[in-house]
Image 1 (spheres, rainbow, N blue to C red):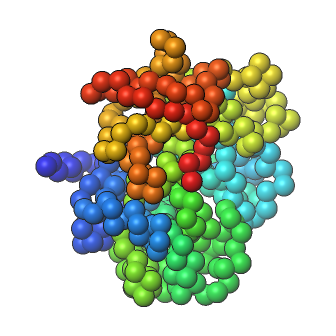
Image 2 (image 1 turned 90 degrees about the horizontal axis):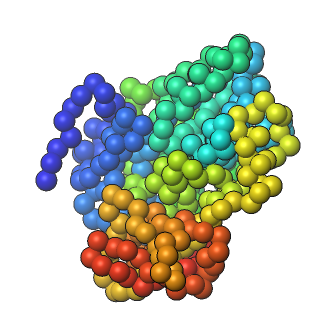
Image 3 (image 1 turned 90 degrees about the vertical axis):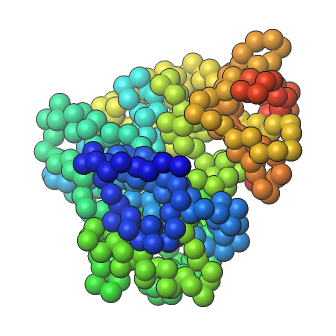
Length: 367
């Protein structure tokens, strides 16, 4: 048992005190913030997400805000996905890449106005990267981190909870679309989104002083539906084939290797960061691809802190990037980032800390 030592380098969430009240039992660090990982009963948290509704403090998904006359051009320069038809109130999944075409983040872009955009980022210093890139281009755009902190409501009953709070208009929202609104005077943006495939919404709190109030509003509205706290750390994300950039990717991974090629538009302007490299990689063909892997054995054996090698025919063909016990499949499952020569159905051998383990490759998602 250990505690997290408070430091000014580690920023608390607006919901942090509320998560403690609700029994926060484990956490990790993400974007220099405390990210809740579990509340002491992982099985209950998993099945709550699968069958009911769960609420997550995901304020670690920080926003990189672009504002100013050149904001739209700036957003496109950072995005290898065509934004020319993106409308105000629409969000898009974006594979951000560096100049080599390496995937460095996969945010949701939200277009709040013609001259205001948010990138809702995964774990990395995109704020600093964007400021450097756009500053060198001489664009008239401000790159800031606004006071915005998402709270996720996920699961098959999530829509009922959100409708109880905001009204039935939320039932007509399209995926990744959002609306700026308020609840009890608390300013928020509501988006149909979230890091699960069970359905859900994210409430972007725009006043960090009112985190506990918003948490309790959602908690009370969800009570008739059996809501409880959770986190985006269950086996569901692996079962559903969701990518964790930085966890399932390395310093050479490009979008085509990890099933994100459909989000890359090769005919975007030449000034887009990484587009020249992405065109070349696409023309040559990626060297690796991402598959699922199902391990032999009937006891939970999750991945530790490091990737584990995958071998076939006496040679290493890639790595397993995550591994969890799937309650629905009753097996250890994970992702394989392997040579294109490896195909679904292949039998492979994993080099695990306890010794070699047999497994077989499958298409993603698992479920």
